[in-house]
Length: 100
Image (cartoon, rainbow, N blue to C red; front, side, top):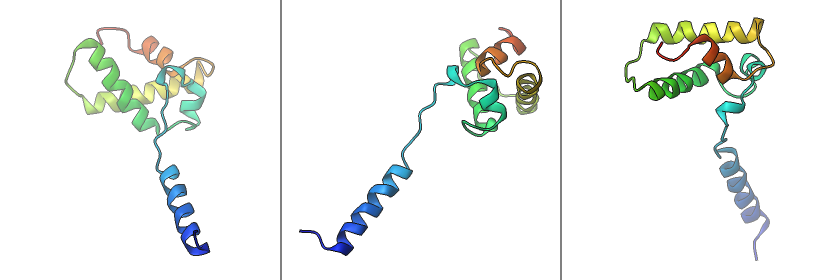
């Protein structure tokens, strides 16, 4: 049988492991509104992931850091001012057509 102190330690460890659990996000479902309002994750982290995703689709392994910043800002502005109802990936595809 567990004593009160042992039980509280076990409960603390369980809650800690739950707090450290990963969250999985389907990037195709992130809306522009969620991106702009920071509801999903850091916009910088999402921009980096999107850059890797689209560079991978194109077979490109180069990274232009300045271009990454510019593209992330363009996507944010597009989502903020033009298409709050669409998905983030739709915005990226409209702003950065294949081959760019």
